[in-house]
Image 1 (cartoon, one colour):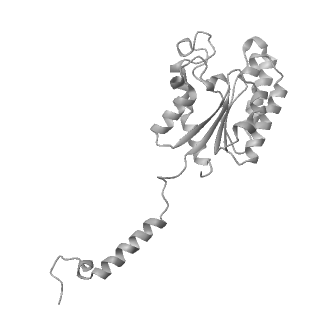
Image 2 (cartoon, helix red, strand yellow; image 1 turned 90 degrees about the horizontal axis):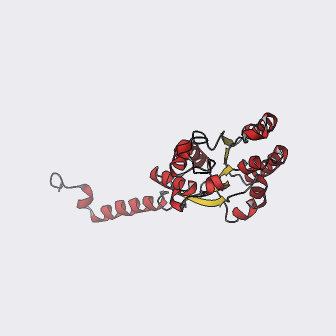
Image 3 (tube, helix red, strand yellow; image 1 turned 45 degrees about the horizontal axis):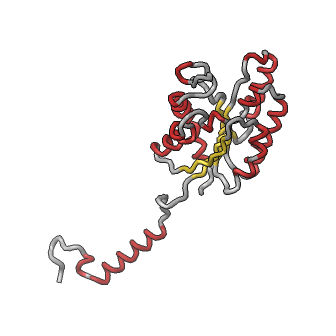
Length: 224
């Protein structure tokens, strides 16, 4: 006898209904889900500018970047590889250590202290090249942030210093952010009393500016 109007076919046949439910459950188990995917591990290898020198932890670059990424729906764990006072040589020396637990992407922000100390740009280039080579060998995509030398060191030093970042920024597989302090450097209201380190508002400006590049970097990261 035909089923009454409006009664689903599965209700007519309990065995058929069980078959449909079992098939649906099997499909759900096979379907990949991002809900339980591991967060992308982002290494920040830098100096005092990314370490948040002179600021409470909540106002530092790494924490502000973490919050901005979370607000945009990104599940990211930041590996703190930023040390105040570090030079490119220091970053090179401890790279293996900070990569001990692995990383899926890296933001490299080094060189400011090389410039402040008037160190040889050729040595800085060798250090930064070694860092980028090591990350490339591990297939870790990089966002490479540039810097300018202080003007008191003269135009020749400034040109040689700047050329290092522009050359390395053209490497295949490297995203280039020409100047980490773009829009913040020399702006009194965005810097601490020393005139070199961004204040909380300065950090927020840096994060807002660099965020699209970081999102592009994350899109290139290997699945966790």
